[in-house]
Length: 332
Image (tube, rainbow, N blue to C red; front, side, top):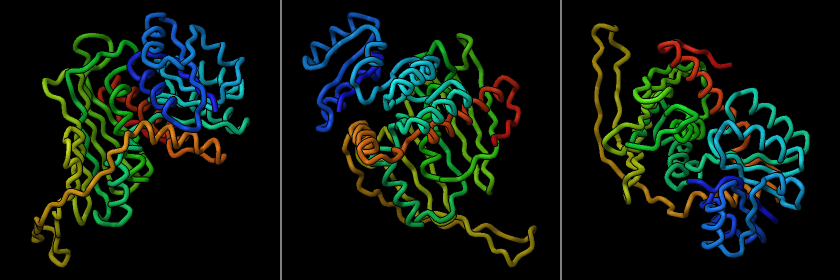
């Protein structure tokens, strides 16, 4: 198979490296409008062909192309590639709007092409292990999902902090919980530019479950932590930890339902904590393998266009809410 990568900024070189490493891929073409980026890629990976214009990929025999460009270009480039018969890999967030995402999915389905949305964390050993724990029923019924992703980070010129950072944890939430989102509220402020640099996002589900996300580009410390609360046990995932990334706490709250509302007492149970072993294989490598396998096996990849659409719907609703001081926005 032959692969292309459009955009060699922050993430593109990682895609080039992992495409080269996959045994099913025999050729990789890298594209960027900046010659210095092409020269750098060529110095690192001499076997890679470099081009300035991605339209050359439309005409060639490339099977699949990764789009690692700003989000407002994803729809245009993705549509051209799909109409040229190419499978596409799209960086997060999938598109700038629900309408754009739906159109790309429709074109891909019509032409029997695959869309892979790069929700990389789904392929990490930690998130895969959490999914195993939830499916085994160890946590019991999930009642909340709480996430913090903050750092003194890179300001984006085209999107706010929710569009930049939240897709990671929203994709994890959708993968782990498999619950239907009903509504969203978002609050935040822009201290420096037009786009909010600190924000809080709340997600309401159709059943009695709730998720909250805190994202911030202007924090003095870097935190990557989430808590999944179940009625049996609770789990903490700290991506900044080198070894014990996951900790499962045998803790819960028990209510005596035989008492009246005013007399009932909450019983708090605190037991042992254990940290399961996590697979350390690079997530991006597993993502590339999943993309290649989905094409060869003619099936949808785990993180497909529909998965990307679900995240975009939440992001789009958050934009409406944050511009209206936290107004509740329903999602259909």
